[in-house]
Length: 558
Image 1 (cartoon, one colour):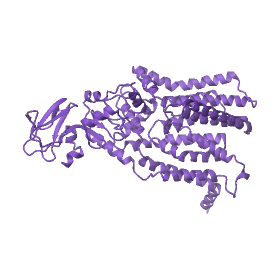
Image 2 (image 1 turned 30 degrees about the vertical axis):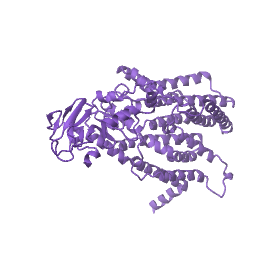
Image 3 (image 1 turned 180 degrees about the horizontal axis):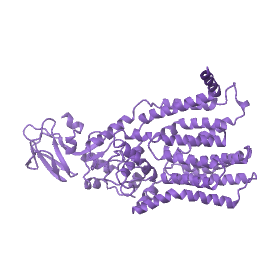
Image 4 (image 1 turned 180 degrees about the vertical axis):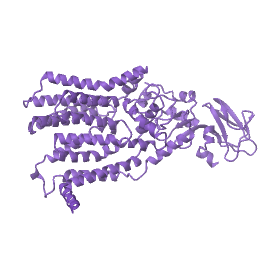
């Protein structure tokens, strides 16, 4: 009886709204686990994994391995990679390590919502943010942007949650310094926060609330001191490795080669920016004036301005727009939307609907959109199979030519990753298009070439001519298209150990006038194979691939 009464009391203490919210939260995390093992692989994920792999194997990013992102994330995640090990399903495992970043983001969003509105708005704003399809999907990918966005949201939560003190200012600066050490896109955040702070100072001063200049200066210096801690540590570390020029090129210099992808004229973008900013400033002033207290008003205005300024700066001026750039924006937008919904006077709701009906309906729409995105198809299986082939056909000492690091566990003979900045620079002659020379110099016998390849036409033609397609991987070799000829001439471009492949049996002919007794090293240049009587050889292929039964389909059919 006592336990029954306790259960009855607990049930009465939990409203239907809270039960629904908890159920949706459980569904959110269950669906996230499903997506981690099913969602398609973005080309950036193996690229970041490759850099993490480099840390694990004692290679220094920028100097030894190409990267055009800030280094903190790949360094922090290297222990997870070391613990998991080199395995074909590494992407799923590393995606699981992103869950804490997702939780931290949602927790920060909830704290922001509870501070500038109330706990009810914060709860539904968090659910809306967590299930917003573009945020939900992009944030589960293995990329630094998840941690980057989480630290930004946490910095804002710390900023607005309590009375601003010197330790709080230092900690906010420290969190912003983490974001800078994760991504140079933090420049947009700092600019948006600066704009937001200026608007808040003007708006609050017009309502009789002023901060003494001396106090403002002290807090600003405390924030700056916190901000420089991690970026300074990164600079000192790379300087100690004599790699400071490499760090500068990878994080700044290389990215400056990117040409703007904006197709809208600058004049139009400037007009849109100023109209958007003017609208946001007006809304911020109204928020400050109509809030119960000035303190509540400036907190709301700060979040509004930081959110809108970031989005406007991004879409109007950032040279390259990608899904991950919006990760810091979506959660704050959802909180502002939910807070606005719950600010509507109760009398304006019709048909006797509860106040949480609108946000709950929006959450259900998001959930339906995610379910209709077909999470039940295993898109990750293909990527795991590909990495399994990489581990099977190559040894750790072998180089593989891939576009951006999609083979993860092997070094690339060509320094640059073929991401958008590199391709743009090569197309405009700002970087040399000398990939074939690097393949030859490094005796690279395996290359990735498929519909996702990002090579120049010259490099793509070279790979297709001198590497035979097996799967997504191509292997150095030459197919014999006239196997019944008296002597079969062929040219080798990649010096390596090769084998003559027979559809059945073992080759017994003569290679370059000498009896062929098995795989041997062939130098670059012209060669000739004379088949024994009755032989119909398929071609010559890198011997290691033959020994591991990794053969082109055309060889298997003969």
